Amino acid sequence: MIGPILPPWPERSPGPGPVPDRLCLQGILFALYTGIPWQQLPLELGFGSGQTCWRRLERWQGAGAFDRLHRILLAELNAAGELDWSRACVDASHVRAKKGGSATGPSPVDRRKTGSKHHLISDGDGIPLKVITTAANVNDVTQTLAPVDGVPPVSGRVGHPRKRPDALLGDKGYDSNPSREELRRRGILPVISRKGRPDIQGLGKLRYVVEQTFALLHQFKRLAVRWERRLDLRDAFVSLACSLICWRRLRKSQPA
Image (cartoon, rainbow, N blue to C red; front, top):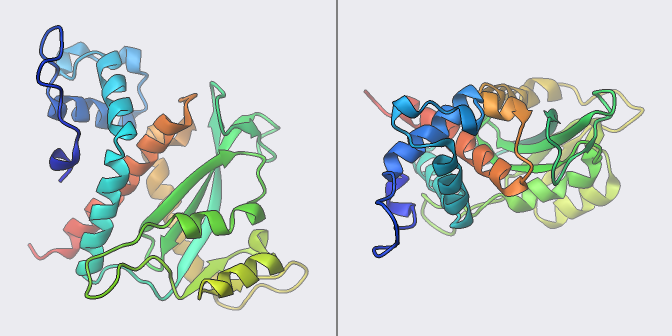
């Protein structure tokens, strides 16, 4: 699925022939799954050096290949009736940023150590629609709309591509009247508990899927801790992980 959307290698590039895209992708996946540093990528596996895979990751991210792959898989899931647009869930999770870099800051939940925060929006069944990375000290309430607006138009059904859920579910960290008004303006019903009041009854049973999605993302050891200083390379790994989660769900939905 990813092969046709990768940018072609220049035909008359100087030097020896490049490592095949398939092997570089295997090296990138190996780093994503294991969290191994690029310089420790075993040469005997045939993936090329860590520098080769790193450069290929940079090149593919610059061409938007991983976002396109995620969008294609969302369309496949939508065509199969596997996307639940009746509601979407939003939440955030902290990760340690070992080497600092852009979109990092002192984490309020990790003794002010440098970290980042992933803001995730999933459909009603836990399929990741969009992940945005910010500094760890960014307040959740300021990022209510960014994941919503970042959901790409998803085709796969008759009619215009869809990108808006019917409702957005969030905890008290997203309690904001201006955000509620903006969601309603987008045709989305805000279902967000208010601070100082009891939680909306039954909201936790509907929102657990986003926590489940975070657990799936953090099974990729490269995402459990942030090692990339550059935000674009971090986003490349996140998009690839989201695509893998969608791909697994798609395979599970297809008859044997």
